[in-house]
Length: 327
Ligand code: UT7
Image (cartoon, rainbow, N blue to C red):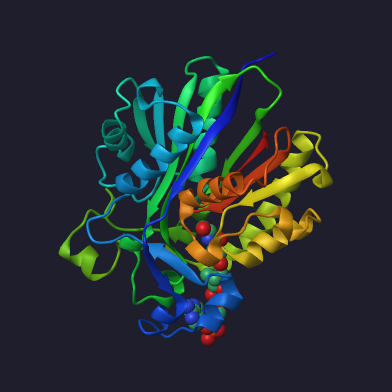
């Protein structure tokens, strides 16, 4: 049997502070009704002062390692998918590697916005299949709240903070990651972006005054591309694995908008009981949304050995990605 990577442990961590839709009604011209109807979000978690991405990563990683029965010193590679790391350099993965005591591991961050976790899964899977590493820690973590303009109702109601982690191990069994698929259309980069703070517009008084360090999104345009793209992506992913929609035990989608999630489920004729939804509690946590949802599904006992589970995501880049797993 060829080498395969298997998720042997999951973990997640959400900051304690909750901001609900009614709290937001006091900040911007919005309503619980609008946010609930258009997005499905009821509340989101946000970090407290001083809390960072690596803090969230650390807790999620400890839980994943505990579930996997693996010690940090046995991890060979740490990948953190994030677009809101502790600082531009070094990587949050290196900070996490030190804080965890993963002394033998290489470490790097990966940014594919909301598709980052599945991109990371693809990278980790290929390192394992190629025989380079046997034990990999992959984390998706975001502190989106620090990059939100809390006076912009078009974005501040959507996002939240959190982290999810998985431990991947090489196996030769029938279960594990069957395929990963990653795509991008960089022509549409400005649909979702943080225009300032990077090398093209380094931080100055001017960029800060213009709010260029905040997340900007052309929501409606993104929504239309997302629905169309994801409908094709999930069908293609099933086809690539010769799996029928009815054989799928769970779909774990990125949690951006309940209307996008239901449209994708409808395309596959999947009942919503087979679809992981937690954006009502956490909002859109970008690259953390899928590992958080996966951890919840696993801990609730909703996935049994050998069942098929599909992950799919869409986000800034634009990027989109999917993975098929035999649990
Ligand atoms: O995770 C990365 C990928 N991201 C996504 O996939 C997000 C995709 N986009 C979406 O989820 C949706 O487009 C949104 C939730 C962002 C917006 O929903 P929409 O149904 O596309 O609304 P819209 O942008 O077309 O806005 C409709 C109206 C506008 O008012 P007018 O121009 O019709 O008078 C907005 O100004 O709703 C207004 N609006 C709001 N009203 C109350 C926008 N935001 C709000 C708000 N509260 N927070």
